[in-house]
Length: 275
Image (cartoon, helix red, strand yellow):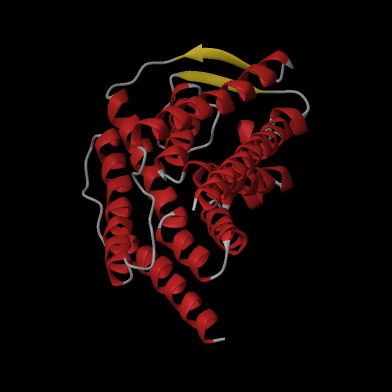
């Protein structure tokens, strides 16, 4: 009971502390939409970085963060999987005839919009799959950490509840997929890259993923026909196609995880045999 109380208290102080800080700190005003959005993403990011450092420093001997370990491999796997994830969804939806690009547009400072999207994805992943995830995992297990952080991740995407059950399931399975990738490669960089490809390319380039209303997009993409397939108003994130891809990729990485565990067990057995 004491362990549960301490774990819950830490989680509440961390998450609520971030929300309060991010809400209280003012966003510098700017007539330039790209600059304003950059500050709007940077401030919550800096808040979660600061809190992560404070909480981690208090128990760094107990908790391994796995934030930037294996950077090259993590970037490659995360980016590659993100392209596969988004690409499969776009190809299938376009092939089914429920998604099509109707127009193109241009807007200044594309690089800054993409940078803002990257900062946002780092913030989200660090908030739910950084200190909180590792702390709960250490105190209990992977399943408990996954359940709690997935609940928080879903809460952060509250608009999905207005969009319907498929959108909610997509947020949940996306979070589970990100956590499975984290467990497989033991680095937060990989889920960050996947998340960024989904939001940055899917949202800012293709206009197929719902971001904050002020984010622009290069292509105007419309979703028509059967809303269960097309996603309707929530765009592809409301589609059962994305739900299927989320589940398939999660199962794939679970197989990779199982294979890794078998390999580690074989190595440990050989080391014991040599002794």
